[in-house]
View 1 (cartoon, rainbow, N blue to C red):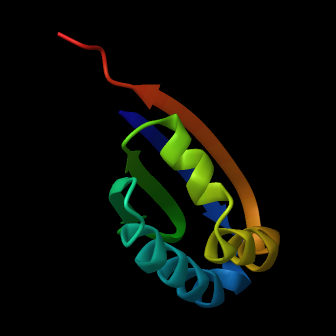
View 2 (cartoon, rainbow, N blue to C red; view 1 turned 90 degrees about the vertical axis):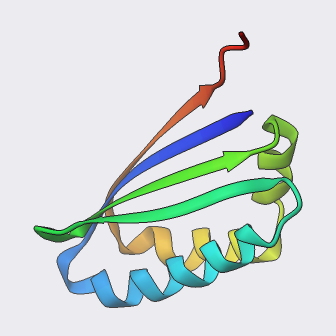
Length: 95
C-alpha cells in the first residue's frame, strides 16, 4: 500500500477556483483501478487549508496516476493557485 498525504495552503483569492479543479481531479482519480481512496479534507476554520489523503495499491499505481491527463491538467492549472504544498509518503508496515 502506498499512501500520500498532501498539505495544501491555497492563496486566499483562489480558493473557489482551486477547489473546483481539485474536485475534478479527485473524482477522476477515484475511478483509477489502482486508487483505493482519495479524500479531500478542509479545515473548518480556514477554507484555504486542505489536506489530501490518497491511498494507492502500490507505488506503481501512484506513478500511473501521475501520468494521467486529469492529473497533468490539475498540476498545470491548480498548483499555480497555491501558496504552499507539502507531500509526505507513507507505506503500510506488514504484520
